Image (cartoon, rainbow, N blue to C red; front, top):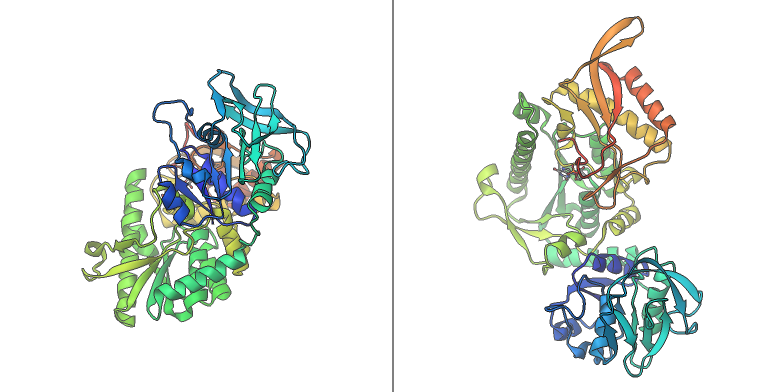
Length: 514
Ligand code: XMP
């Protein structure tokens, strides 16, 4: 494992992903972890991330000097670089000479371990206030900028390397190459982390964990639960039962994808619970968004637990495992975790016996989203499932502004299917993050179709581009594509006579309308 020490900014996750792109397994640890504990993980190399602090600020995170003396190769980036410099006796000045953004880097030692084979002049991404003016003893200075005399250094004998900039961001044009040079040349690591290995490792781990017991997995139609289920299915076969709650709020064809394509690809035992009526009844007369969300969430848990109970009764009490598609970013963001979590089922809601405790199986807890997709692909899951864009748990229920009824759901499903079809045909799926299609069920406007006046509903298109759904911008889709979608929806979907485009970024608008 390669450890990425997190100094408290958003960089550590990106670095960990870049290390994995270099086919080397990486894990993130907080900078507050004692160095002895880091070393006890037997890392093949350690990377110190950037961070928001100045090394001179009071309370700035530090590291025990021991980390540089254990014989483990270390690569410091930005804050990590400055920390390495000051800890080992170099000079970092608080000069006020800030560099921010794209900056030209002058490589002074072209044949060095990090810079070998990269241009003497290259563009890098800087973000710092302090500057290193003298490298520690025994270190060779390998690059500078117009502002910073020491922008990179290395001590090949001790396997210590550092750069002032952020090689992990794409604006640093040779960043990935430099990271790989550290891993392969500096630390002598063989790239061997592949999705094939992940699958093999996880299959063995799941078998060891579950033994001859049984497991249940809820499928949502999304990527994560599908890939988690497929992995567990590969490991324990018929000991797994998958449960899919059909709440009637899915998009066109999605339930069939789970029922047919997922089962065909994996051979899993699937229990489909048809709960459409139940959800419609529970939602009748409700148009407040938060109330709708609460009802859908509550009904979902009830139906899922009822299904669990039936499986328990049928299979006997040895169903002890619940599969969840938790991803690595969830683990990191909730502060780590050791993989031993137990959850107690909400026994008061669904009527499960009080003492039932499921143990969690979380086969994706080491993986980033793009790796999950690769694993899914390798496991033979259909492209439509593996490449699916984000879709909210409450489904189309929160894309109908107004009361949710069967007729309105069917209408929205048609409009949404047309939009998705045309976006796919135009090759825009990878470009947009997602495109909610919203029915304004309580709004009508006047139109004219054929010879007659119409009084129908508007459909809203909400295409957005985003990195992580925390912020988003509205996608500038080509007019021809918008025109095609508009024409088709107004022609093909009864009771819709207008299509409008949402041109609001997030913030202030959320991605979904409710
Ligand atoms: P908002 O509307 O908050 O959405 O900008 C951000 C992202 O989250 C998705 N979303 C949900 N996903 N359950 C989910 O699993 C939910 O209740 C939910 N609500 C919103 C939304 O589609 C977008 O990707």
